[in-house]
Length: 185
Image (cartoon, rainbow, N blue to C red; front, side, top):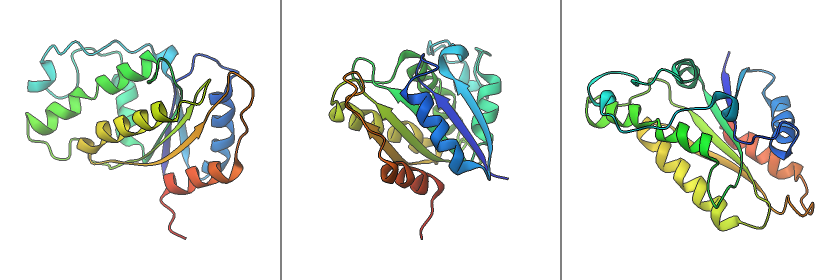
């Protein structure tokens, strides 16, 4: 059975990101789904302590279980608002902790640093029309996953959520799921 790891980047349990998670889950009934709320996970930031240059993993153990599920996943989906033109701090902290994989690949020669490649998607919601920020976030995610041997292949952007002028485009949502699953039909 394939595995989907969902990473919730919003602190709002009743917000747009949660609503979109509920919609996307319906398309992955054939998968085992794990959901991590990045705010409840409360990841410590990477301090560039150099531990992972010489050892597998991280000196900080707060994300050990998360990274086990991360490495085991076939699909990873981020659901995040735009905060100050980028990811909220807990998502940024998770991405910074990828240093363990970069050092595994570039310092310790483990290529790829994760045995199972992933298909990655991101759903981004912004209070205003911040398409340039959403594009930047998507490209930053692609850059973060490339050394891991994984492909960021799917995105869905919803602008103007603060004004209540947004709509959920089911065609775009289905396209997001289709691309994330890697369907070619």
